[in-house]
Amino acid sequence: MSTLRASTPSAATHQGAGRYAPSPSGELHLGNLRTALVAWLFARSTDRRFLVRVEDLDRARDAGTAGAQLADLRALGLDWDGDPVLQTDSGEAHEAAIAQLASAGLVYECTCTRKDILAAPTAPHAPPGAYPGTCRDLTDAERAAARARIAPRLPALRLRAPEGESRLAFDDALLGRTEGDIDDLVLKRGDGTVSYNLAVVVDDAAMGVDQIVRGDDLASSTPRQILLQRLLGLPTPPEVSYAHVPLVLGPTGARLAKRDGAVTLSDLWAAGMASADVLAMLAGSLGLAGAEERVTASQLVSRFDPAALPREPWVWRPASA
Ligand code: GLU
Image 1 (cartoon, rainbow, N blue to C red):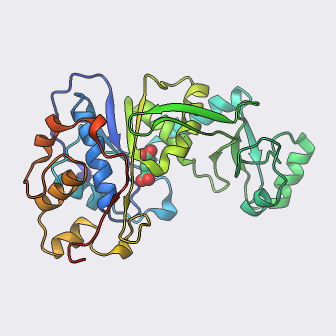
Image 2: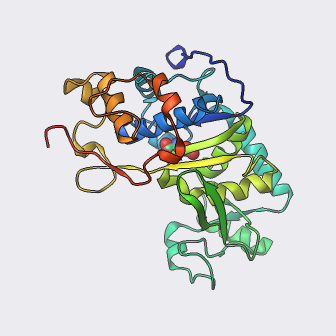
Image 3: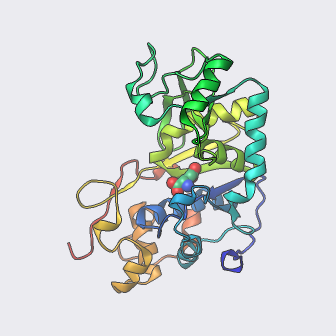
C-alpha cells in the first residue's frame, strides 16, 4: 500500500512507543487532529517511537479514508516510524488471544440481542449497562437451544470477568486517578468481528506500545482493556501509561462534528487556511503557542509539558462566528 507509506525514522532511544490509531470511517476533524498532535508530542518528547495503526476492523464503518487521514497528519508535520499497521492484518493474533482466554475458561457464548440485554433484570451491584449475565452459566443443552433459536445468526463471545470485581482504577496523565466499570465484555461479535477492546489490547502489546494517548471518550473503555491485559499476561500499568485528551466541542457545546462547519483540514484549506495556520490554531488551543505565532510541530516538542495541558474541552468556533 504505497499510499500508506511515509515516515521519517527518528533517533528514538526509548524502548517503548506511542501511537495514533484512527478508524478510517471518515475524514479526521480538528478534534481528531488535535488528539493526534498530543499523542505525537507525548511520544516525541519522551524519545519514543510513534506508530500509526489503521483500525479497519469494523468494515461496516470503513469508508476507506486511511490514506487521506495519514496525508492530513503529514500535512501538519507529524511523522511516524515504520509503515502504518492495518488492524485487519492481525486476525491471527486476535484469534490466538481469544483462544488463550478460552483455554483458561474465560470465554462463553452469548446469544443475547441488545433488546434482550435491556429487558433482562440486572444483577445486584452490577454497574449500569453491564451485561446481566443471561448466557454466562448455561448448561450445554441450554446453550445448544439458544444457538438453534438464533440460527443462522451466530453467538457472540464474551469474557467471563472475575466475579466480585466490578470497578477498576488507573492513573491517567491528564484525568488523574480514574475508575470505571468492568464486566463481561464482548470479545467477538456474532458477525465474526473481533471487538475493539480485544483488538486494541492485542495490537498495542504486539506493537510495543507503552504510552496510550487518545480522546477522553475512550477513558471508560480503559478499565476493560486493563482487565484484558492482565488476563492475557500482557504489559499493563504502570508499565503502560495512559493519557485521555479532552475532546473538542463545537459551538453548541456538543462534541465537534462535521455539521459544525469547516472542521476538516480540506474544509479549512478551502476556507483559505494553510496547514501551518491549522497547526498554529491547535497549538494555541493546547497552550503551546501564542495567538499569532507560527510554529512547526517539531518546535512544539521542547515546549510540551503534559502537566500544563488544558484539562477542559476546547470549544471551537468558526473563524467567522
Ligand atoms: N480507533 C479508535 C477511534 O478512532 C481509537 C482507538 C484507540 O486509540 O484506542 O476512536
